[in-house]
Image 1 (cartoon, rainbow, N blue to C red):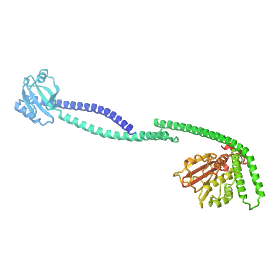
Image 2 (cartoon, rainbow, N blue to C red):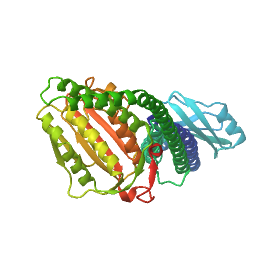
Image 3 (cartoon, rainbow, N blue to C red):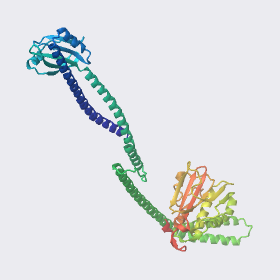
Image 4 (cartoon, helix red, strand yellow):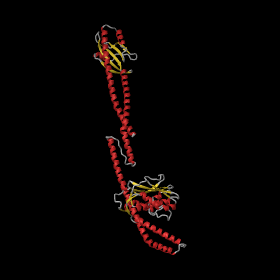
Length: 515
């Protein structure tokens, strides 16, 4: 911008100097010619007057000495170089010459004037500078034609011309400075400011900020350029938004496909496991129960049979979890009070809290917006999340359950993973533990089936996968944030009832529709 302004100012200055310089040169030349012309006219009048005085003096019989005295009286005339009287034979009979001027002698111009009796004027170049010469013929009383020659220096004209040149240069410099300042002000305000706005807008758009718009408030070409820029940015924003929506839609379809593929694989696995293990497990469990019934209460083998029955029930529970994860869930949506549901979940986990030595602190606002939910499935979501939080928390630690926007963990060193997308407005429930936290690599896998950070034998790895499935079915989103050494925060965001789908609360929705 500075280069453009400097170039514009330099070009305008050059044009100004050329135009005004040419104008001043022509004007000063005309002024000098006019001054020379005025000096010539004044000299002619002076020579004619002097010729009349000479003729009258000669007619009265004045001597050469008296004519010399006449010329001496006019020596003080400003600019006068010399005044000479020539008789008809071309002899100088009287002369008044400046001390630094050479003596005048008759030359061809004098002889020509005596012969033609016509006045003449000429501009002479002398060592003293330019001299204006005027020869005025005069009738000599004794007969013939004499001449009066007057030489006038043009130093005064040159001094006046030089003064006029200096004044012109000074005035032109002042005008030029004012002109430059005006151009700078106009260029910076009228050109630089809107162009800088265009540059800032172009840089912002180039940096990815397609919301940038330029308002220069002008109706000229720059204003049209700004309008075209705004239209271009708006078109780019619409195109970018369309691409984002297409990408999100494609990503959603890919996730749905992946989820479907996972469900198919897990379903096949669950069906095969249930088929292969169901009958043997039932036989083992039945034989263990039969043996337990036949043994007295204090028999030492009862403990071994209890272990067999307990492990059999655990295997059966895992198979049921696989079947629950693989089978499509039917979701019955109705308005639910989240505060009451969370209170029930905390009561259900009271015994586990005592066993773990961990406290659950329920910190909810007095009123929570209702959500459209399947109470049983939503209860399973929070049971899974709170169970994970209790398992991760140290003894005598606290698990916080609260509601509100934003996050509780500080952003420094925090990693996260999110699934689903909830439409605003939402109710956000936070579950924050004081455990060791998880790395970014672990967080990237936590929603994968069978992935678990717990010790072997203490988790199936299906808890968060089921949570994701249920939350998607409720058109919500689940986000897990964690900072190593500081804890983990799980956030479930569910659309409020007024912002949910206009379908009846009792609508039956397949879980695959929320994926």
